[in-house]
Amino acid sequence: MNDPTTRRRTPGEAPAVRAPGHVPLAHVVRGGVVEGVHHGSVVVLAADGGVEFLAGDIEAAFYPRSALKPLQAVALLRAGLPLPDDEALALTAASHSGEEIHLAVVRRMLASAGLTEDDLGNTPDLPYGAEQRDAWLRRGLGPSRLAQNCSGKHVSMLRTAQARQWPTAGYLDPGHPLQKEIAGTVEELTGQRIARVTVDGCGAPLFSVSLHGLTRAVARLATAAPDTDEGRVAHAMRAHPELVSGTGRDVAALMRAVPGLLAKDGFEGVQVAALPDGRAVGVKIADGADRARMPVTAAALARCGVDPDVLAPFARTPVTGGGREVGSLRAAGALAPVTPW
Picture 1 (cartoon, one colour):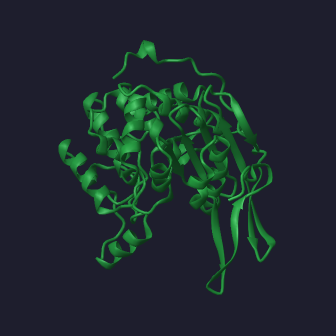
Picture 2 (tube, rainbow, N blue to C red):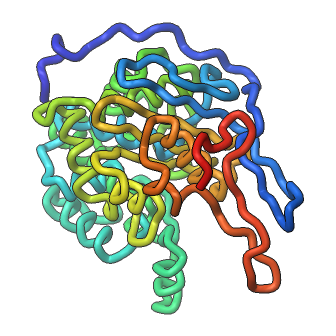
């Protein structure tokens, strides 16, 4: 762990809890007519941390969902997580698809700590990836804590509690010492107090910050020195993007396409991404629609100076009719691409 005196910063006030002032960010166009509009908020940070571009409400409190996992991984390292290899650390920050490449690492993490799947406190679920889910069901298998997409994070929470000699029972209680440590790191990295605490889909405490604060925190990870806890998490995620998400997932493809990019998605239309020099983007789609998340992210990254040709595969989602393409979903409004794709 790093020396706390070199990293701790006093967080500012908590973001306001209010109905966010989202704005139109993406259009669904069919046959030349705007069929649907996705609202949301987006922030683009410059390398010096200043706001380069914003649309919507980037200061209202919101729940990052799984986009918070890289921060939670940093918190676990700071709290004493036995130094895992890069694969295990990538799984700690992952929303994995439940492929065998993921399950094998989680099983190894459990075995190394003398734990079993029954020790996990996450909600049993089917694999996240459609192909993996169908194969799972064909084998006659049902919901599993191992296959649930947050199982890597939960193993590392248990291992950290073991290392600190904290009770493993009740490790998901917000009042547990482990969760208090995680909350403190989230506040320090985002630079703001947590506004509200609730329960995420996997059963773990979920902390409400602002989109601006979350993006600022991810930029800190992306620019951190390799020997820091932040830098270790960033390196593991960059080295193993398929472990952080899954084979064929758009986040893994985006990290492979943009050199040095650190990226993490979250349910309800959340996406963050940061470049090694600190340029970063944060996206929240108001209605939680996953289909709008990546086209908006691509447009935001273009404003960071990322080559539009590299972003082209992510910048639009085809709209089909009768088995053929008749339109597309792409960024619009204030975030309309600065360069046509």
